[in-house]
Image 1 (spheres, rainbow, N blue to C red):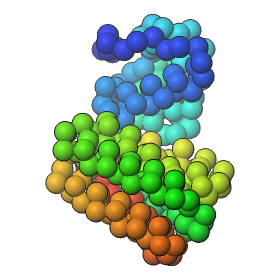
Image 2: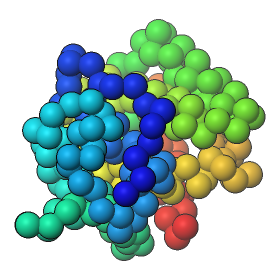
Image 3: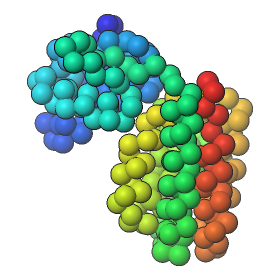
Image 4: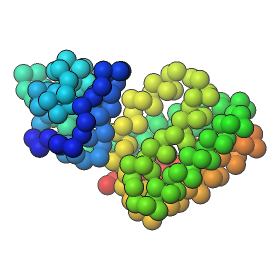
Length: 215
């Protein structure tokens, strides 16, 4: 298993969450490919941590459907499964629809400004061809209504199933269709700002449900 050599060691603050995030990112961005074996000792050495937080992270990744843990054998990255990705897309789209509908009446001027700023960052990242930055800005934008809605069940479902869509998101952002997401975001923000909860929720649903999961 090739291990990257250009990553800094993980600090001790929120160690478990950081290890989980770093491993999840490495799977999503293709550093660790589908069907690749993940050995906890090698991963621990890469991240500069003990094997315990790595094992805990691998269990969380298994729960998210990104790895398959086989007792007595090395954990491996889950093969791409179009059906599982389609199912995750449907769930994630529905959760964002629910969150936007609930959040729209409560969004403040600062919340709207944060969404606009995130979309500007998103557009700049696409122009620069920086797909990880585009993904981060997209996350920041959609996180605003999820946070304002305050529904912990919605947040939990999104945390579980959104990782399965990362490959599809990165693919979209690397194609001309990715530029269309800027306009979708602008429409979503304008509807949220005007208090049109149902219309904004419909745009949120379409934004996620239109994600092409075939690649």
